[in-house]
Amino acid sequence: MKSGDVVYVDSSDTVIGSGSIQHAVENGIIRRVSRILIFNPQGEMLLQQRSATISYPGLWNNSASGHVDVGETYLEAAVRELEEEMGIKDTPLSEIGKFYGDEQDGAFIRKAFNTIYTGMFDGIPVIDENEVSGAEWMPVPALKKWIDEKLEEFTPGSVDAFRYYFDSLEQ
Image (cartoon, rainbow, N blue to C red):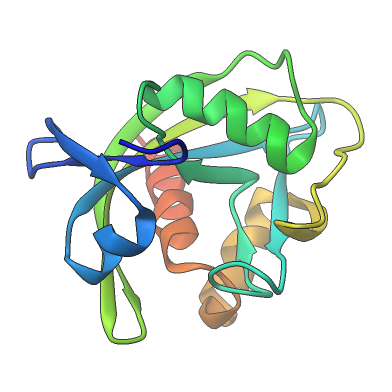
């Protein structure tokens, strides 16, 4: 195990090992990912646009997201990623669910269990420009319309998480 290794799991989300993200993607190994949806008091969701230097460059994504590192829980990873990517800290997060997803990424399929968290934030995010090139607050109805009309502008995993969230509102 090296620093920066992510958790590898089986089809039941039971830990089976750890290693690099690249190794997992190239070998079809399932990883754990935390996805965070942050809202402001007006009910708008914070979106981030991915930087040019990471996977899915330029595409829109959840408020924050990232892999669960060795020794972390899904919640600990969510808290860390939210602070690293958006400069948001001390924001209580609530789990709304978990789903398994496959994302086509060129010749590879990224496999992951995704746990989704929501939280409230009333402020201005301070983005990490190494990972995020922009941020925007978006009313949920406008986000739904944007996804329906321009799906290709979003990361595949974010779309799955958004749809999971939208479905949770209808239940």
